[in-house]
Image 1: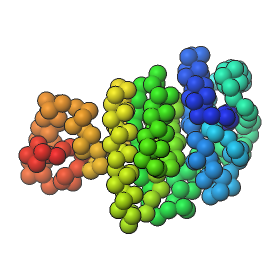
Image 2: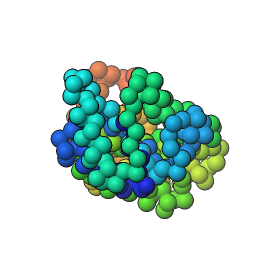
Image 3: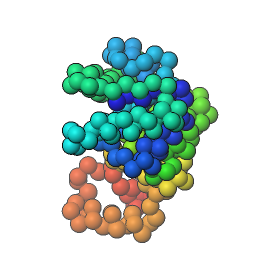
Image 4: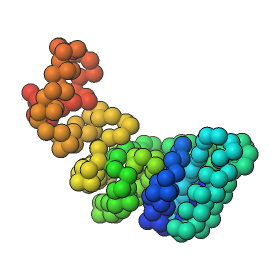
Length: 243
């Protein structure tokens, strides 16, 4: 199913509405206006022109129950402001919708040599606030952000295409990244839902966990890697280096 919305807030409200209706979709993916536009150009997709946001929703289960689930979801989305609702009735229609979602990263790659992608996650009842925070913070740093989200579980993927050679732009993206991480923590979330910590989120990890928890994690790491040969400098901040 594809539900089309005229603004991001309404789309996020529909996500909450579907969950509140005790419907548990197999997938509920959100794409914002910027991401929709770049996908349409890059992949020639079935996504509608001019939409501020879309929800791609899939249900599974007993075939006899699927029609009722789809009708229930359509009713919820329509009551909460959906402008259009498309139901894929064939495997080909379904695949066309998923091709649009899967082509997001490739479509962004067409417009820049690199992209900065995040994966902050917040509790389900704070999704709308977090989405608004991402947009507000991006505007504050003069950045154009492209947002996709696993909306059903609160995992958001703000992405910013950029040229790594542009030092000033990199600095603004780093500031955006830090502010988004802090907003996520204020809303009771996690600075990473899927991508892991690596190097970028080492500082944020100190904000999310106190020294006791990080000390225990470090002890486990040292138990398996006492000489710190395994992927050094990543995943956990080194207490000896204060970073």
